[in-house]
Length: 329
Ligand code: CP
Image 1: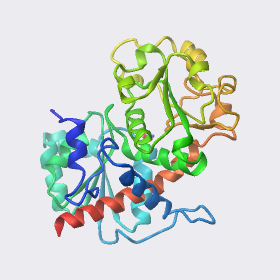
Image 2: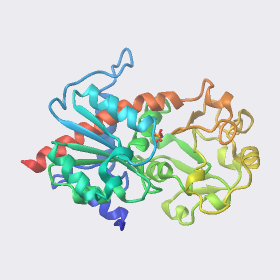
Image 3: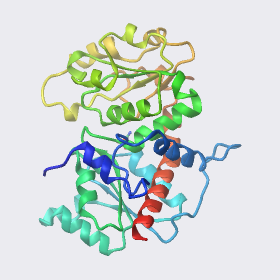
Image 4: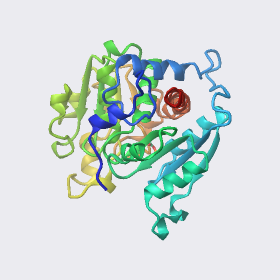
């Protein structure tokens, strides 16, 4: 399957008024557009109790989850988010679909559209898949990228931005470190675009040379191979999962050596600011990229990230539906 460039994805996701009609990538969106997502998500969080509220903004709409790759957090929080908005939600079981009988992806999409889909939420192992699908669907259907290959995971990036804004404060004052397997990480790419657009003071990526992709310096990010230097005085430390399933050659020392050099432990965290926040998109590998005491400790925001994921996905579903309705006229 051939997929087009990230630039095209960024162009395809806006309608003529500059509103989101699909959400494929954080790349190319303006600070105002990213802030609108964060502010809309904030509106779904009760300011007193912190609970996620119910709003029937998508009553009568149908959201279909198309997950070609495994997921716990993203698929479930999209389902919860759609239900909180009173949408009808269908989780399509790809392993039991007629694609196993030779039906093409395009035919499957057109048949699901005929079942009155308004929004497809798509996770796929191939970079560019959500963009490809957005190019195939009729103009009435919105496509939300729930993670495509190494390319992008925009809703994860935005829930991370909401977590940072709520707990660490204004982006302009923040030094953020992203640690580990940057090379294979769609989360890191989407976070870097979002952090830069939102004006973060400094972004560092830390990991072994083999997992630090060339060209990231050109994005204005500092590359560090040393945890002590990389973590010095950071406000937010984001550990990433080692993506063994995406490694096509031996790019890592053993898991034990990786943990000893790059595992986020209480000891290494002493180099960061005393009130540093710890984040991880999940799923976490305890004792590989993060120490249990750090993942479960007082400075960890990992489960808050999951919870805010509901509000951010409610925001993205609502905004994309509004952008689609503007296209429908
Ligand atoms: N963070 C994330 O995308 O987790 P899942 O793979 O469980 O959805």
